[in-house]
Image (cartoon, rainbow over all chains, first blue to last red; front, side, top):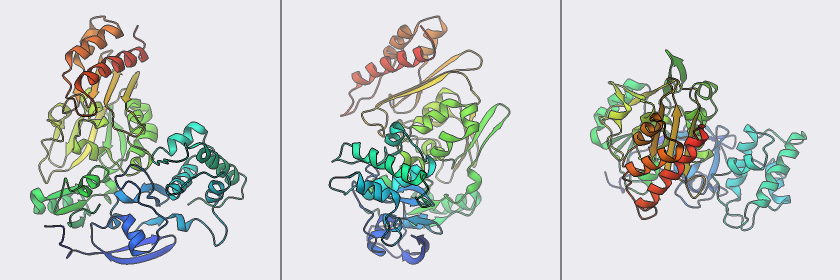
Length: 170
Length: 271
């Protein structure tokens, strides 16, 4: 079979940010392309496209995964959360708010991935120390910041969420 | 990067997976976590015509102890192994290794059966399996680790044969696994495991030194004869014949073997 063959299609039902999306896709369509090109959710970025940088991180049933290394068909019947699914109308998610306030970014390209990994990290470990934060975010690469403000942002988000004015992280 | 087109089948049980693999022949590939296969497909180093997705076979996700052996279902993920209380109690070495595979996102998808089947010489579980005489259970037979990892990414698995379980001995004694790498999420340039077995014997394993996972027998023998950590490490470095590559020359790997062996053996309490 050559790469131009595209006769095989699969129907998938994937819940994205709370809405079930039924789409017909080629099995080879990567989840990140499904989200960006099919659903127009361009908040999920493609960085390295080689499973290293984490810019494409989304939540699969609440857990951080790299959407460049997952076929959309593998997400059939499952729940995906992207960065667009975190805020409630004009109220940012505590992790988004913390990255904003602590300026946990410079160019911002990696930020959606960092935010999704942070949401997943805080779900498993609500009060991580510095070492646990760096280990928890090891799958995300930022080439601008040096990570200091990112760690501050994660801690600030943990404080906000522990104080009870955070929302459910999934 | 977009892979070549392929047919896709979601296996409903192990027999169904086997049947579809049989139909697909050499052109079919098993998709588990996909952490090795999908990157290879994206770069088109691998272009299967059929993917048989076993991701929904929850019956292959388990950890249990039976007759002093740790039985691990092939689809058990790195994240599960790293945190599983039964693994941490009965084979702490494996939990430690699992916690340092890839990164958090990779550990949420990648499986032990995938790493074993892929048989990359840098695959850390392969080394643990070789060190501890693990058995690889497939849909057809049981294969000793020593007979399973034949060469780089080469195993005796038939195209329609599926790894279903990996069986390790229970070993609760002191152990260590050290990876030398430039970044935390890299493959090991050299990895080295040590385990003091319940019968007192020492086992040593090496990752990414040969074209497959190997035992560090020279170090095992040296320690058995009363040698200290430095002597055992030197003997091991002398024994190995690393395959170098553009990033890591063979001589550098040899030096790493000596340094990591001495460090790991001292960690086990050897003088």
